[in-house]
Image (tube, rainbow, N blue to C red; front, side, top):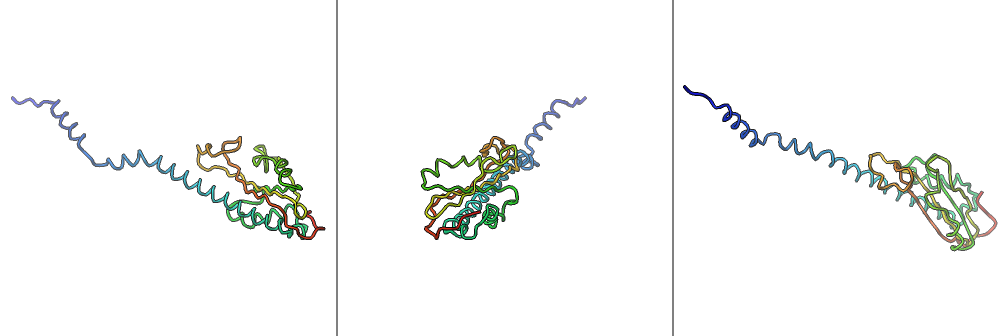
Length: 192
């Protein structure tokens, strides 16, 4: 009488299962898809953040041109109006209403101005929400002037804290900066 070998049949099924390739690509993709999509998202968010910082820097250069040539002083431009000059260009990519801070300071020479400038991280709201450093002095003809504009970028993706420069690891302070000497425009006007 013939007795089937149950271990032989199980062995054959196991060997056949080990050789099967159907669905292997789907399993491999499932293992790689998560990290791949996360890295892709990090690349996109970093690109958007750098584009925002470039736009902020360009808008500060535009505002600096108005201060340097004396247009801001002649128009008795207020801090809010200078901020709106920055926001005209930067407002394309950021919410300028409450999130952009503008700091303007002047001195007789660059050495004095450099020593009086605050850290870029203290211009704008602190992590608690209050504004740390504030100044609005456009300067007279031929004076050294610095303009700093800041915007806090809040990270969308988790684990992006290695880009953070704030004590709160969920954001990065983006900075636009210009330091220049005013042209010898006619004296008598000043920023309000």
